[in-house]
Length: 158
Image (tube, rainbow, N blue to C red; front, side, top):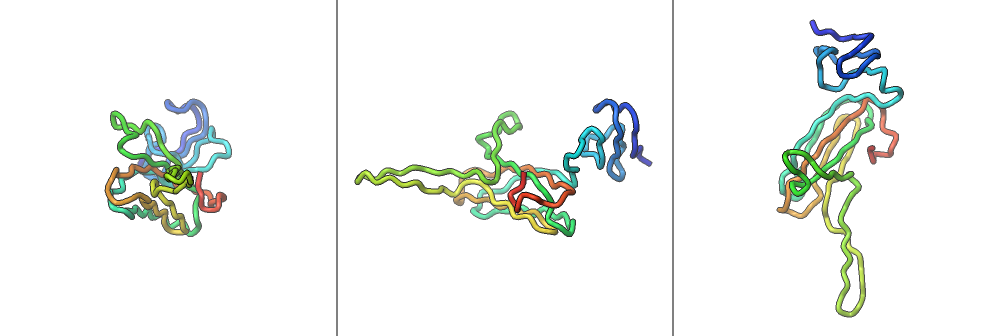
């Protein structure tokens, strides 16, 4: 049986009260804790992960949580161009998109939104991450955190 509760000095956190998730040893786990007294009022993590969306126009990932309410979440993404040595050197918020300015020979300028990025759709059972780019090009690398707290951002996430 795993050590689930620790009141005292944790090697990777110092003094505090720590509770690990079921099946995890609180003294050695590197996974998110169920409770960490040092976190104050910060949201607790329900799930976290990462993945890759392929190069088809509407590739998507569905992360099932079945919490019964729309949870608070955070998602970040990048393309292969922002990865160096297996680590993202730059990440983007789901609200990031490319805008380009076009000036026509007649001197008329306009700004156009170029499909580039991801859409995130949260619900009471799933978090859907969908690629929003033209077919081809780079794959999208994403990471996410789903918190135990209900969403208070209107579906925008952190």
